Amino acid sequence: MLLSLSNVPRDYAWGSHTLLAELEGRAPSAEPEAEVWFGDHPGDPADVAGDGTLDAVTGGTLPYLLKLLAAASPLSIQVHPTVEQARAGWERETGLSLDDPERNYRDANHKPELIVALSERFESLSGLRPVAETLRLLEIVGSSADPLRARLSGDGDVLRDAIGWLLSGEAQGDVDVIAAAVGQASETESGEWADALRAVAGIADAYPGDPGVVVALLMNHVVLSRGEGVFLKAGLLHAYISGLGVEIMAASDNVLRGGLTPKRIDVPELLSILDTTPGAVPVLRPSTGGAITEYPVGVPDFALRRVTLAGEPLTMPVRGPAMVLATAGDTAVSGADAVSRAVPVGHAVLATEDESSLTLSGTGEVFIATPGSLPEERERARHADEAS
View 1 (cartoon, rainbow, N blue to C red):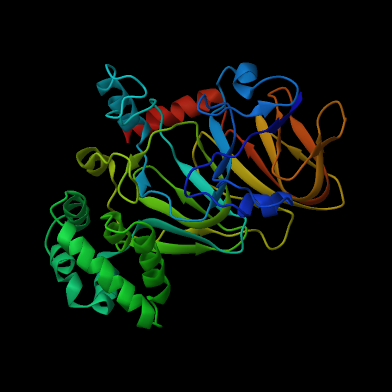
View 2: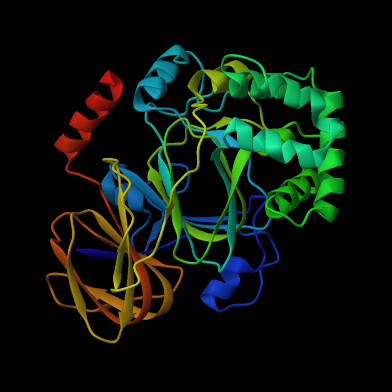
């Protein structure tokens, strides 16, 4: 069975007035449009054409949440827990209501996620940069960064120590001085750090006085082109800066924040789940020789494929429940009954578990989301995650 899905964009302050509107070929919106959710998450289940909301159909069993994301300004710096950490945190907070501002864990699940760029340029901060490289960057910032440089030059887990110091409140004077110096350096630097400094200076303009500005200085500045993606595993510090993308994640709302937000930051809990292993986060490239791009992520909750259509129908096996999201052109999908169903750009179709293959037709681009594995395989993977 195929179900046509839509949803109203969520109007978070960091959203764009134009990106989703341009994607769908309509006038700019009066309010910011940040995310469109296609899933059965109780926070905002998708609308089913003529039949209520998707959670009433699925019972809230979808293992993934698919989104369109449109960022005009930076999102919060954040990190997500492993399954084991989420279950332990959920258990500790049993006595707190779900809307309690002191609660960190909204459910007992992990939240790995994948973002694929739809705009020609999508900027993000993904993971922590190797310390030696950050020390080279700080040379451009100058002596104003000496307090941070000193902390990064010590022994032990210097990145965890530096982030804890920056977020503690004790470093506010240094944060302000470093942020101002980054702004000045960004105006003159034209070498290898020009893009990163410009990005952090823009973040400082958007969030003046926020210690997350200097946390951002420790992170990899990653720029994606259309069709490129990054996978963000548990424990990886990240933030999206600007652009339009397709995002898919495990069905969870567990977020620990590390700056660039007016919301609560629980520094000890953040540091307890943060993976401070530095290094570049691999960019997943689109296929250059075929219609289908796979984005291998190796998690049990979801898999994502990008399909470009040039007029010839394409039949693909799927493991349901599968979702087809249209992002360009004029496309349609049919299942076992061979009845073609149009998928307008910015809308999706859900194929229930009884559908074993889908036929795509038309010209344009769609993304196909599926579970990463069968339910019993997902449970085995979670046990393995806990044991590792």
